[in-house]
Length: 394
Image (cartoon, rainbow, N blue to C red; front, top):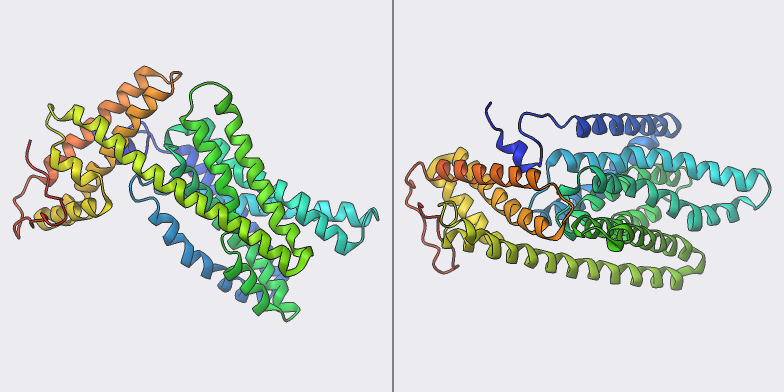
């Protein structure tokens, strides 16, 4: 049976289709279609305006989120599923549950409509929405823990969920704003002032889940996801509740959110350094088998070095060689992370880890043979000024 490198690099057993992810994408897509159809029917012509404006923040922030995922890219189908989960499943069921909560408060005359909205927005919606958005992350922790190799992965998946949720939610907000002639104000508030509210809140759950994925058996694995979820709920509740206190309340909530954003940036920067250190620590073990050289290690340690190597491979052998270089880089990174995961998590299956290690080594061998198959035309560039050079033959 031919071994598919893409299956190995996405953590699947070779020859097995990602049935679970495919079914998840289908289900989430159906939920998204349902909520879009409802908005189209109830919003009329305003739906087109709402949909168009809701897409704009996604077009700006989605490339930036994916740019964080360059050192160890996540499987595209998993990223699509995360986005659709937020846009479809989480948005649909949050809308239903939030509406039911408001109805319970107002129709039983426990509160007035305005006070009911505030209670739901401050105390009900954050719990409902963060639980629904975080559900896919908890699912990954249970069924796809190998995809969570650090805080960066948790943030990436959480941001995809949050962007999807925000896009769908914004459609309804913009439709309502058109009807009361406040579209400009609502667009500024939703798309400019707070476009990262949902990704930022859910990122806290993502970090908690990622910490648990790397931890060995014990309290940290059990508690980290809960702490992350509670942090997401608290931040979301703070933002929604601040609207009652005018500019001062909004400024305080914005300051807290900005501090959380800076904290996330620091965590992501440290995580990138951690991955580079793992590459430098574990991959020299494979020097004797001829799949890693000193030049390779320097190339793998920086994003500019990786880009330069892909450019060299394309000049040498066209797109197939460039694709092989990309596979080599990803397999090398996954191999280093696999070693780290095997050392930290004592409850993992040793046979499964060894099989995955052999698969990754095979991918590196095949990819290296592919991008070294032709001599560079034009000759390989000299990158001495940047410290990077083309991989050498073993």
